[in-house]
Length: 271
Image (cartoon, rainbow, N blue to C red; front, side, top):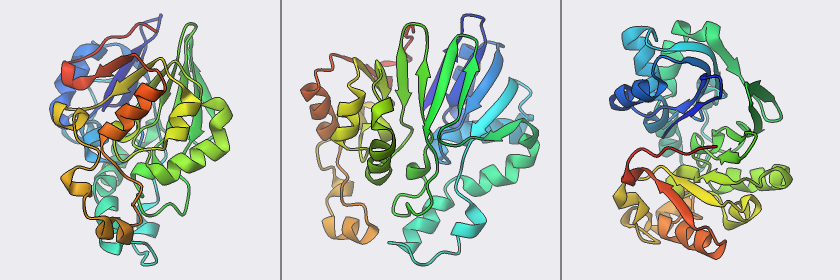
């Protein structure tokens, strides 16, 4: 997942950035502009390993960054927990990217700001409201459910970024902020599968959807092979998870006509 927002004054807002192999393309689109904000939604490899690698390998010298925004779960505290649905998976998920991020943190800590639900920021003509941040106690899907959710408002459009939010965190987002969700465009949670419920998308009621999906993922069935073992999912506390076919059908029911999908290449949208 990687987005670059360019303001009228040619400043950038980067969201996640992807893996190390995605960095050359990201640099191409940033094109030396000042990065007013780099927002890291959550600590998974496919979202922030490129960012971390840039600082470890190059000290971040290829990016002119003002502030890095994030809010990740406390690794040292959580890694010792045993009262969770599936201890083995829980620790595996925590270890996906958090240790690497924390190890690299001294390289960019002076630029960071831990952001919380209810906060906002303004960058040129762009206004950003943070609608969801890490909630203690969501352990079945710990990293995805810690995703920052935020709404970008420009003079012409609104865009809601859901990160990789799953069903449980989606329920909390709906209960706490459903009156704030309506947006013109929506980044589909967790690449459109194993994600928030229909009620969240109904509250957003987008005109267009942003799918960070390869072809195999965008066209996967309602219940792909890795979600067929219902007993295993129950053990993990992750039963409400389905493939993108379900989410795509929801979007059809909501009347969405426009879909931007990364399987079709890099997309450029005027906001």
